[in-house]
Image (cartoon, rainbow, N blue to C red; front, side):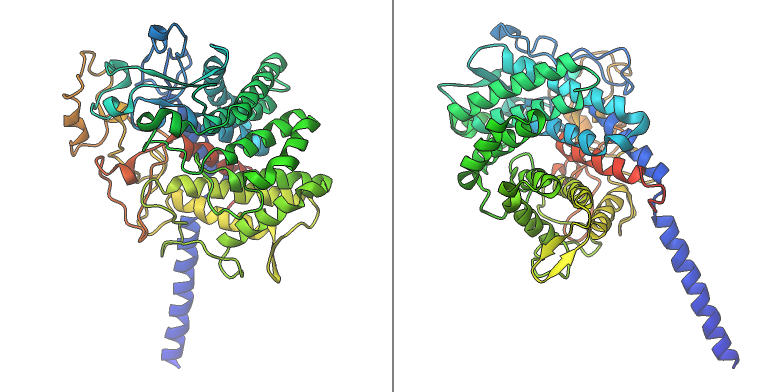
Length: 497
């Protein structure tokens, strides 16, 4: 009897400890709000150009103030893509598109962060407008020679590497980067439609012109620019996916039927018939299908039923137990697609799960069809929550992969500006080669890049907090951009835990 009582007591104790551990691991809506604020603040650390007076991340300073000048064009502003000082057009445009999509779908849950989110979008679109309108028949797609930039470890404020300007044109096309730029401008036009109508109109009009340029002069920017963009942001998926994506965003922003006709006429040659299981700065197919499924789910636009079916296939591939399941997860439950910068796929996937769940719910009882079974929006939300929580610290390593969030987070981030003493702490110039002592230093980064989500752990949930291991420790704008939307969703749930 005594042993039975002891056993029962132990069971109750274990259950209590287990429940407490679950409570400790769970995040509240306030936690998600804190993470949202930080995820947007990160973009201030990536700013190029003259910083505004309300800059909060104050270890940064002005940089790239003469970008474009030697080519007689103003290309000041925009974002550095990751831990270097190059302005790459393709990931910058995709980042801007995803920031805008996050606000479009989940801005109502961003509360006091909505203006900061819109400022992050505008910092991108102001630059993209310059790049798209400076010279007729031309889109400026990059500032900085990446091969030279990567031979230096210096703060953006000290940059003395060549600020070469690269463009695509009617003779040297870049349909992928141009159509992504059109998508960014069109998506942003929706964000500013009520708060700044004239800016919104300018964004949409420019989006249409840039899309026409992308469509009329077809070709991949990788072929036109070669080693300047490859292997850094080579367009491996080609440009067809961006053309369909760009048309889809202009259709959503303008409700212009000519873009509906374009999608119907060209969809088959641009990937609408194929399943695709990745969504990134390079490959837009899964995102396009989810975006277009909205019209079928909410308006019963029969032409888009195909996109709903393919969206289902994409979603089913992520859900264990369904007939279409094929995704790989780490033992700790993280979606795993690549050894380099894996969290970019986790944040885009989480965003699509939540957005598709929103579209399904709006369709009154909508579900994803997985063979003979169905998956509810609640299942998609739960799957996204696992991924978001893993990034924020609910993982085997018990580390937050967002810098500055939680008690334990990466200290040795692969990022020039964050790892080299700031211009305020060390006003004297730190030259190209002198900076490498900070890359190889075992000390934590002196400047905290608050909100940065880095590359993340390996397939076994292992993470080395090593600045020289860029595959795991480098942040990027396109990792954070969709994450803001996901964080906004969960911050808006009163019982998020």
